[in-house]
Image (cartoon, rainbow over all chains, first blue to last red; front, side, top):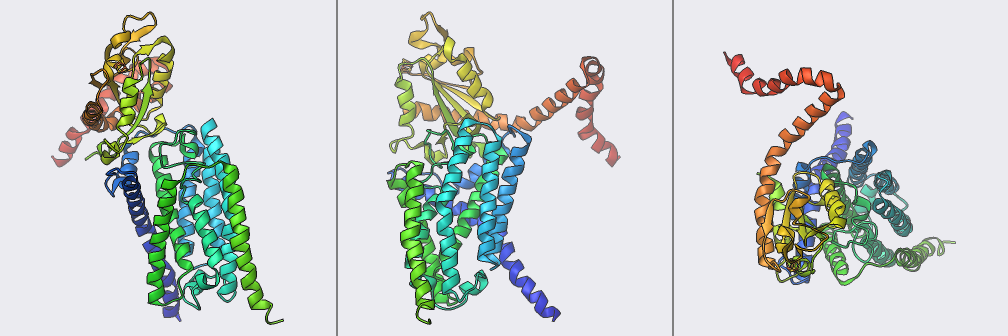
Length: 302
Length: 185
Ligand code: SF4
């Protein structure tokens, strides 16, 4: 009995520890590869692949300047909840809980930006809220669709180890999720609230008032986030077999490359476009696919 | 080793100029020169910047702008004056509204001469600035500690500060190597 208990704890503790340790390394490396690929697409040589790590280490060396005392707290909470979100995911717990934790992390970030009273940060925060409105329906549709095709379970651990790969039944939902992934990765044309590049329309939007360690925390949180978002993509392919796991990882990398490509061939759009298009995609691809799967399952039986 | 030199983020301000140097600075970011090779990123935000590139001379109206950008940058920070205008006022020096070079307003660390300064010279100037940045980074912890001490002294009021400042300043200096030596004895 105790051995069983110990085993079940180990089953959660090992992935969580691995995630906390390796996700920032993987996320930072992906960010570095992103910058290199972006540079090559623009005909430049580009920075070293380890550049994102240099940036964060540099930010840690800088003088700490904060505009108020709550700002660091909010950003710290955002990082914490990002880590918790990833832990929930890689421990194989509930997909719904994962989505709520992710939203909480984003809300803390918005609160941090609002707290600074800077007009740039506030417009950035408003746009971040609009972006959340844009992607949230599709994330929920993806979760519910996965619930339907994976034998009525929200448990991520069961999802990855059973049945047919979800993408076969949910191609529309998968495409819809790829669409909102552009928003989540903060890529053009949807990098409205904050951009990695030197667009200066909003200064740096959400992050305008953050400097030094605060900015470093934010950057690391983004690395954590990117890793579990790619994990979500993986969810569409996993069915417990090694072959599909390999396919899943390859598709994750391809999806990341696709986002970098989209980033480079698009100019920034207005928020209206982001909101409208994301909802239209969610409805046409996501909801329609979900309904088809639903009727296939229940309509035939009645 | 200091990571400041591996990831210098710049902010660029163009004062009273003919815009020649301004355009040369932007040329550094193009695929031709690609300063991102060295991790240099052009931020529009003083709070993210390590290096302040100023082109053009200083006139009465842009004094507060330059000062504000400089003050908003977190330390360690370096100022690079680009072009002869930013160095001394250049061709505009005699104008009625011109103060002169950037160093009439804020401390300048590196001067890049030229009219217009070539992108190669600008990159060279920034790389020179990195050396200064590393030096400043090394001194930063001591600087901040000193400021904290000063601030806490000020909090006690002027009279108390005058009394306590003498023993306090000698405190940290002697407590370093000497006390550890005593313990070994
Ligand atoms: S130094 Fe020459 S090129 Fe540069 S801003 Fe002054 S006048 Fe223009």
